[in-house]
Image 1 (cartoon, rainbow, N blue to C red):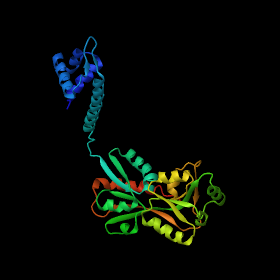
Image 2 (cartoon, rainbow, N blue to C red):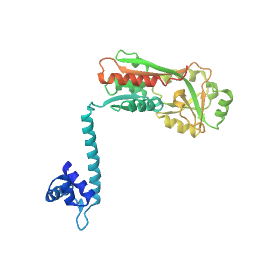
Image 3 (cartoon, rainbow, N blue to C red):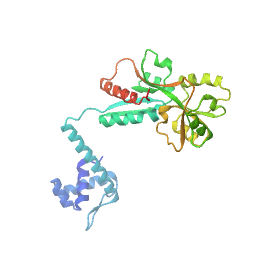
Image 4 (cartoon, rainbow, N blue to C red):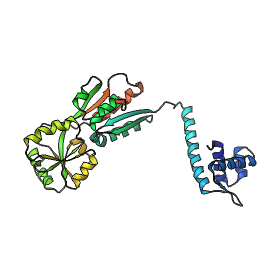
Length: 305
């Protein structure tokens, strides 16, 4: 492995074009510099310095010089941190979330928290909601966010907090017959979706089943056309006019108006619940404050009452 002294000698040769001047800056002899470079070339197995009337670095030498410069900067930064007492370990908060929460709720919250606390790293795991509780119980996540099934939420092993409830919306392609109908009526009802293929995102949890089972029984001609895991897949299907997506309103905030029509679902008491879930029991004290700040950042995204 190249030493810092070898890399420094290589960098100075590249800067000065001279073994002699590099030696002067390192306060060693020219022969010592030559020895450092020869050992480095033997280590990497190729020439690093073009010797002749003009001294310059080979392409490999320039590549290694850039790596050495980056290492030098990192060491300089680490020394400054030590001098200023910035040696605290970085806190890594592992967040498991369903597809909708991962796409629409977590990114702005993560960006805000990490910008305010450089020592905090939030690692997001986008998973089917059916996996979230198990990830918490097996210690693979510190927090879960999403529409987690009631049995897991209500178990004594987990602590669950309702972040907010949201209205349900229907997303259809701009310019489609349904979009024109929705704009005239101010929304769409289940009856309007007869013989239209419904697109559902992450239908593995009880919330979707509770929402749809009564409606599918009550409305003949209402059927599920596509079940996908990613919000982006659902929107691609909608854009191609291959069905309509049924989503909580929060998941539609960033949609382009020229491509999508977002219609509130009318004549229904159905709502979408999003939960913040942690394990019961001892928690790493360093993570307590970041967990609470994350909960507050997500709750702040609640739709207007």
